[in-house]
Image 1: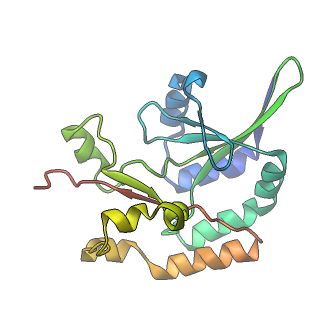
Image 2: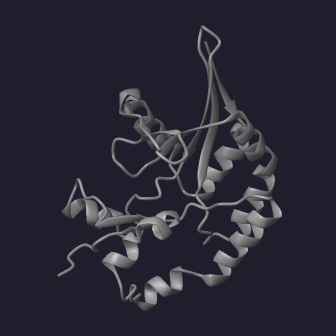
Length: 199
């Protein structure tokens, strides 16, 4: 059996850029149990969430996806350096597992997109240690089930702080980056949380 870490220096740099504590991340990874793997219905990949529900998601990927990730990694790093407010998913690592029978499994370690916002995660968890998002919408499914529009027919009213953090320039830069790499990112997650001490 073998375990290969792909581009370790590059991903270590990306973790530092995202202010991720590698030791804490590794600790949460060792707590994860393979029996908790979930299958994503649309993509067919397997997902393993961290025990705390916010540190990471381990996602199985194909060999071709690993190849494309390696090819676009230098440009991905440069993009995140130039656009720290990017809405792209943060990728913390890429690995290949090979068992004694020769079967191969590729996986990427990613930010947990449905985790609590970093801005109030400490106060939120102090109030509700097992807090979960109020609601999570997969916008790519909106045309099929209309879940978001059904729950919020008038849309969402954003305060000035949220508007400031949602930078249209960063979103436009993300779209331009994906286009330059020939990548279509059709998955957009919208996670809604109730702020701590909200009435």
